[in-house]
Length: 147
Image (tube, rainbow, N blue to C red; front, side, top):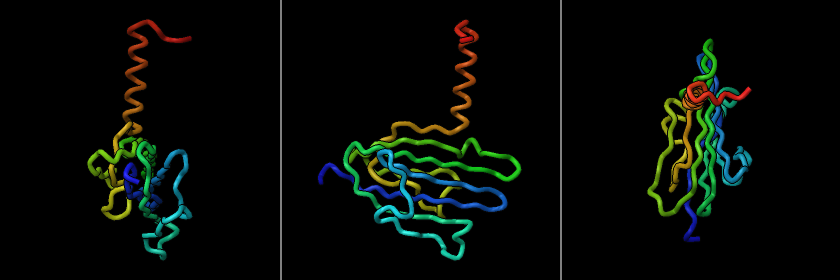
């Protein structure tokens, strides 16, 4: 198993009167859940209705694809497009250990992912909106708008 790497993953949700967020981790099209092998419930059981977090160490082969999704909503404002993200990683045992965090999202101060990860793609919802606007503007400038 020399071409494998141990990856730490933290996933779950938190909701309050001010904001709420969900963290989802998917490995090769299989979303992790509290019933995933090795997943440990790490948050306070007394707060299970408003906050539930699981942590797991995964032994993954070189080339495994990990998708990390964060969705953040703020009361009275809707979705926080700077902290709503979709990130893709490739497990690569030759890479240095990387910690993945999203500002003010997660359980205490722990990373959402940690391990030998190569970043494939990392976009916030705001970056996607900005790209859409840029594409629409370039269509106007190029005269290539589709009917």
